[in-house]
Image 1 (cartoon, one colour):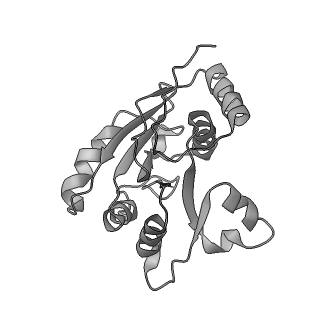
Image 2 (cartoon, helix red, strand yellow; image 1 turned 180 degrees about the vertical axis):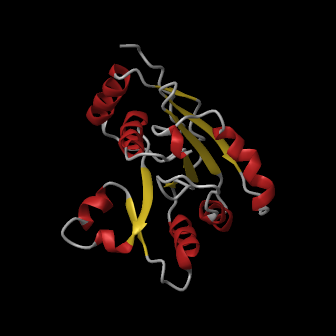
Length: 197
């Protein structure tokens, strides 16, 4: 079992205070041979872009790394997920309900949520599905743009057993011009099912 050098969190990045959970998560990841590269931007608000997304294992590792790093991470889910009997659990795990039928749509609702909080990291997987996709969905970009927050890159590389952290990347408003610049961050990462990339 190799000892991983875990990055120190900055002063303003949202974080949790759960030392036992953090220690257990770190030990599990180290036991499995996983490590981390890079740092989380020391900013109070951002959209964390996670890729590639090819398996349900992505969620397991996201949770483990969230606990291991000590980061307080939120994610959006369809509003029907948050009804009884399990709605309370999804909220406790960082879930934020979104109703796609609402007048402001998903982008507007999530931008509003970011604007209403002093600190929040919103995790989004731009592929939107575990299936093979040709193009990323653009919602993550426009949420960050409308809320005036940066994108933080998070790459899950099953080939090298690493999570790689990068950013911040501030969207310019030109999605087509910006996409190749930050998508190139992920070009060498391999998902759990590389055939779906």
